[in-house]
Image 1: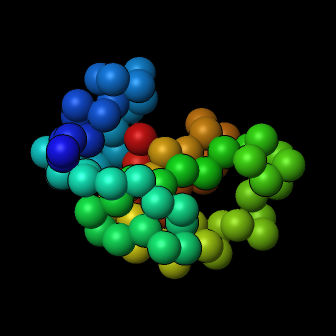
Image 2: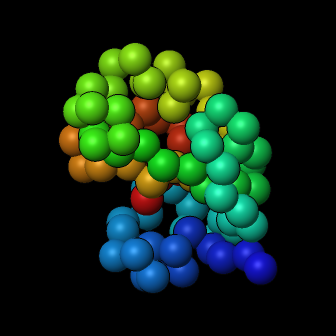
Length: 80
């Protein structure tokens, strides 16, 4: 089953940063995600510090990444 970013945002109460018509087909961690996957990064996931995982977020091939509002978003990526 696939979902657009717009539908995922609607289902989760998130805001789309990027193309809302992009399609996601799966879920994966940052390191193994493909362009058809969504991944996530949150403050509680990494003990409140994003610095050590910022590189993984930027290197991820995920089609979109769910992030907490306090994460500084790099340009050219899609986020929820």
